[in-house]
Length: 82
Image 1 (cartoon, rainbow, N blue to C red):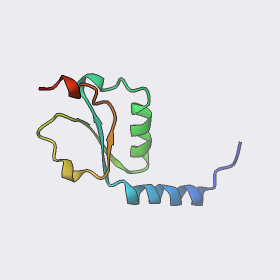
Image 2: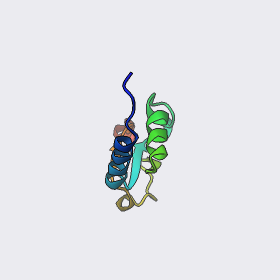
Image 3: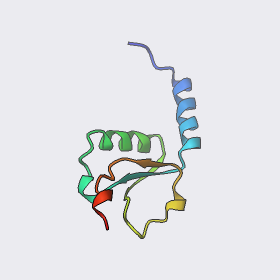
């Protein structure tokens, strides 16, 4: 197993923070917690200091302009909406 170079890791974390300001993890209410990787990815991003909010794609109260970037995950019920 390769040793972790802390200075390189710190640099990568800082690069990540520069790119991800406030990430929207977009899903649907019925899918919350069902994506196998959701909890691990969200936790890893938060550990690096990134702001992550899990939001429903059809929530009309969401101010989408506050997010940078948006990660579209489980919006499978889109076709069911009228």
